[in-house]
Amino acid sequence: MPGFERIAIRIFCLTVCFAALCLWLPLQAGATAQNNGGHFQALQKELIKDGFNSEKITGLYSRPQVFFETDGVTILFTYSESKVDYDQFANKWSIDKAQKYMHQHREDLNRIEKAYGVDSRVITAILLVETGLGKNVGKRSALNSLSTLASLMYPEVRRTFYKEIPAAKRPPQKKFEQTAKKRSKWAYAELKAFLTYAYQEGFDPAQIPGSFAGAMGYAQFMPSSILAYGKDGNADGSIDLLTHPDSMASIANYLKRHGWKPGISRKKQEKVIYHYNHSDYYVKAILKIVERLKS
Image: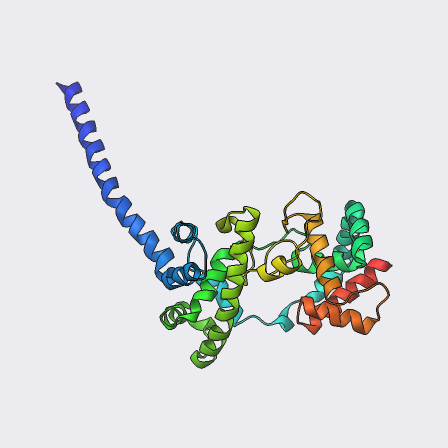
């Protein structure tokens, strides 16, 4: 009898656990749908209306790794380019890294410089500042960042988002409303470009890392820039900015399309680089690095 009792108890425990699991799974699925889809319901409808496949979109936004990214997007409302320490990229340690990088990738850099007429030191300087030569591409999900920012086009989402911003980081509501409305329109256009790019290249949108603003790859291109200027630098049939040759070629193409030519003046160099990042601090840092790479 004791053996039978132990078996009976085990069966009872397993039955209870199974019943609890059956109750938990629908609740968890509902929670996931609320967490992921609650803020993104209107956004999904907008994307489907704009021509994206309904099954793909609803399936994508129901996945647990797709969620409302309050923490990351909050940075956009407090970020200041003038606070970035660009001097760190021109110190001896950084320049040594850049020189080693140029030596390691000299064949690709020389080939791309010849094809586009863009100084390989400029390409290297941009990669150094943007991601530490491909080491820091962002730990956030580009999809989550862009979806969260894009969803701020809806008043009810803006109200929820504003309340979720920590009080110490919360901007005045009027300023927040103005900024959120403007940036959400920009982010929605970038989100559409992002999804177009991901599906076009066969990438999983939920697995692509990016910055808090949705910039991607070693070159930190926004999705619209990838579609417009991205290049297949290693001729493998895909544009993947998580590879060095594609990133180098894409940077070179971007600069060339914005006016870079061999031998252009310092003033014109500044103007072209400013297109890449609208910051005088950034432009000065890139050209300072280039000068140090020459020595």
